[in-house]
Image (cartoon, rainbow, N blue to C red; front, side):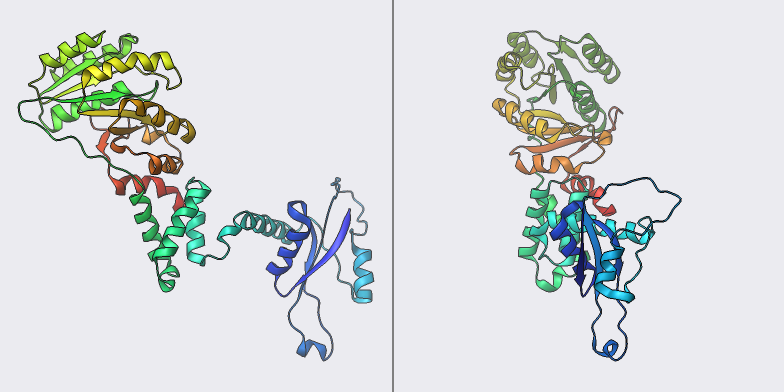
Length: 379
């Protein structure tokens, strides 16, 4: 265990010296500003002193009050006027330790050290929203290169620029155009557990009830009886036909049968993107459908790395749209911004609950940006 004295014109400067010398394991024993006596007090500058060390062994408090560690060192430095060491349990020392921890956090983000205060605060807010450090820095760098120095000192202007930049990074895909006398074919694919069947039921309700379209349902999901029964009940409630198919040929026949309706919605069984055999099984059905819109359904509760892997592996089917599900279940939405900023496919729909058909809405950049940045306000 070694005690050292650190001085600075400000407390922050002295703390920085403690952190640079002793690291995160530093233990502050005392902080004080020595009192100058006589005429020297008229000419001297403010000065802060911190006594700190590392390698301490923590022991339970005893009734006796032995001399605090470092007291002898202070007597050698200051003689009879040595300041007394406070108890290590005081609120002051807790605050100093907290400041050292914050200083360590700033050192970890030292690449932002030269940024204006408002821009740095926006960077911290993005991290608070669970946006990755690399992406957060990219966002503030773009803002820093666009705004004038005066604007960078205006927090409101910077916040608006952050929102606009995040919106620009979110791809949104428009629906395919309607063709009179020919059904729009909409097919949903994706991994297991992301809510494809519930989503296709919501789309059916949206098209049939809200838009007044003539709808037909087709399902390939013969693996799960419950999924087929769910769609059958939805079809009965909406008074629309449902076809259950098992082969690509049956799929083509069902699509031909309903070719003059407004829209045909095709559900598929969930497949793990890592199961090559199951992914290969899906390929002939995708080819047979020749869908106008091929939607990859992704749950925002999925880890970003897994989500990106799903997007990349399902891209073999020439996916045209992405549907984001379980938005209402996500603790923090910022995690998927990195995924959205890298996908070439735009988001088409967002589901926000279990209600059919009301809990689905067309994707909008401003709405998605609001979800991504909602945690940033607490920074």
